[in-house]
Image (cartoon, rainbow, N blue to C red; front, side, top):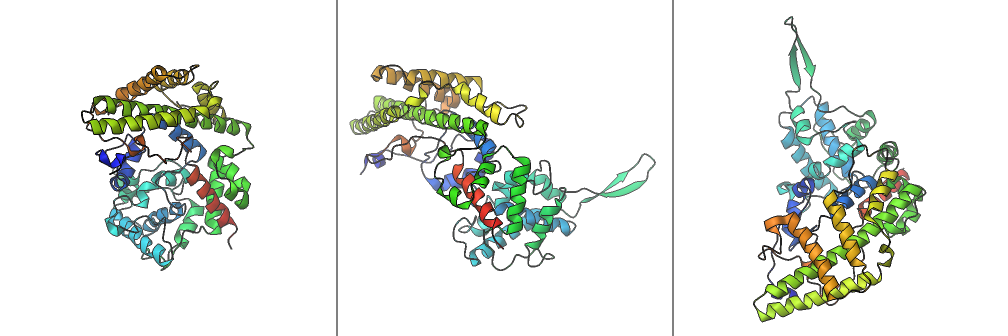
Length: 432
């Protein structure tokens, strides 16, 4: 039995935003022991930056064409003048889309391909933020539940004036976008029955790609999407890392530099937390075997931290305030009331940064750094802190194996999804 399996672990809820919590439940249930817990609250600024760099993305997304597919069902229901059960119809049409995509040869990226109609989180849920971001339902923000309620057969409402005159008006579920409407209605084999073609795939058609590109240029001209689209297909494919990009915008380039520094810093702080958690388990374990296991993991995390520190020298003169300033400068027009991080997180980052780069790192200084991480986690979690409730399972990545890959960065700001979406648009633009 390995050291990892010698210790008991179980699935626990992660510390996530409300939106991600709602969307991620089924993924968490199938994922086994958690390994991506934002125990120190460092992820919130990274998520905000990700939203600015790649608006409309989520780590739960698979294929960009869902932004085209799913709102089309809503448009088709609206064309019918209302349906008795829009919630049920949406679910049926999303289930039928699964079949058409599989018949079209799609084997990956099909949401619900293994669970079918038993799926709990359909594309219309996980992609709803993207529908608003790309304004496929028209300008403004639309709530999923309200849209579906208004798509029922009771869309007509009667207004009575002070004189007693009654007027029937249509309570629109959303304001149709003319360009997208044409795209949406052309997707169906039979618009009357809202029937998909027998075979569908994820390749964007030229008019779809053009629609999405224009939306990005119009709504998000400062986003990183624009820089990626300007690269072209071959150059974008060759781009492996977000942090190797050289944006034409000086402000965006400065932000990427600061984002890279923050991701590097967050990895160091997280390694310190993992070391402190292992030290706590080693100090409090009664079983000699389990105590030795935790000491081993503590030593391994210390090794990983020291290795990280050797490559993090460029952080010595870094200041977390520089990150906030670079965001404000790059997206000043979008941030009328925007706060990247609260005062407590800012203070934590400053204190950790100071402790990280004291002249000589010894056990006492590492304990000081670990204590900062511990206090931060306890303040955030309260009685659900792993230091207060030791029955809570420890994430697998706290217990590294001997051949674990060394980690430099904690966040890549949804680079994978942003790059994939930009490529999908560029490839769609050259299709006939």
